[in-house]
Length: 290
Image (tube, rainbow, N blue to C red; front, side, top):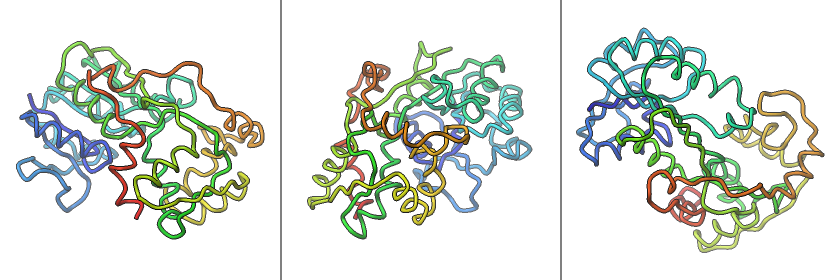
């Protein structure tokens, strides 16, 4: 068995590489970068770019399983080349947003390309990444021990990226996952205020929660740049998932009283190991908030 991991420098991909290596599985890490990614020394690193399928020939040679990072524009060609090269099992990093019909133009086209390829496939569909809070709240915590957010009681089931990697590795190496779309979240419903409290405990210092308007939060996130700026409108309800205009006031009312109908499945339901809590995630990333 040889697995090609695309997106091998990503937050999930790098963990997939390490877990496969530690399990003794033949793994090849693909990257667009010129320098070697942070993977174990024994792992073979190859150059390739999913946005340029012509660069994948060497990366795919001798591979029979593929962990596929989502690049929708070239997904059909990439998958076609993979199957032609001998890949028989593809595990896609997708999103729980596909199941609600919110994500129709990013992860869904990748899923569809894989399903029509003739290869054995599994989709890994995590919900909200706990990591989002590092990108959104990290700068203000590091500089001022404060989180500015409009919805202190909004709650969901944030997922540790390590759980996502565990599910992907299980689908790549285990049996019984062919044709499955694993949709899952974290093990606990936890509000924004409670998440800040968990980060505060992990850091050993007080983090103040400042409730602001959606407009103020959007201005704050845009000033940060990066993930926060790129996703401010969608996360705060000014646009929907596809970028269309939305009613932020209605979204705010729903988010403020967000209590999902029933808990989602967790990574533990798939791997047989307990899913990681938000408190565990906060401890794992304490240094990133300092």
